Image: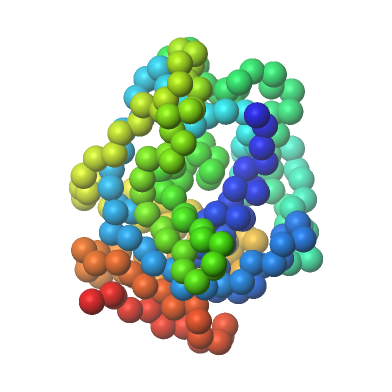
Amino acid sequence: MYCDSIDKMVFSYFTSLTKDEINYKGTTIKPVLLSVSPLIFRSFECLEMCAGCCPTFSLDYLTKDRGDLVERKITLNNKEITIYSDLQTDNKGKHCRHVNKKGRCAIHGYQPLSCDLELMKATIYKTREKNYLTAKKFSRGWNMLRVDGKRGALCTIGSITPESIIETRRKIKLLRLWCDHFSFNSWCDEIIKWIDKGNIKKPLDLDNNQPLNFYQYRIIK
């Protein structure tokens, strides 16, 4: 089933990270407290013959580095933001056009942000009192369609390693570029500072219940 990856970005990652109110597609998203789990640094492995998380969805970038990308406008906070996408509307297959028969990505290293962030997950609760950012397996991974025609994502979660910490920091920096591009203030800098200080064994609680021009962050005891 086709979906627009920007919807996922806004209603998941942007919603969890924003310090500002966001208006998108008739929905108002208000900033609340964010808790970043140390589990966000866990490593993971993507196995062959899977690609369960690679159905047909839009592949979105901030710059046009490939000839097959088209310019489009995304309206957020009543502003039009330019991005470049392979919408894949012509792809009639069940998986992304760049997935090969072994379930591997032919553009790995140039994958769009929505792909790059897996398995980093933002948990958004309807009560909107607190959101959570962590790394975990897909909640409905058992139902994901693999390239071999079977169901069930094969990805595995591993331990925290120096390499996985560096990789998580890279992803947060990339998220910061997207937040800046969409012109709202985010918690990305605070998360990066937390990583750089090295005290990442306890959750990071980012308090959005302050006036929007003021923030504080603390480590949960």
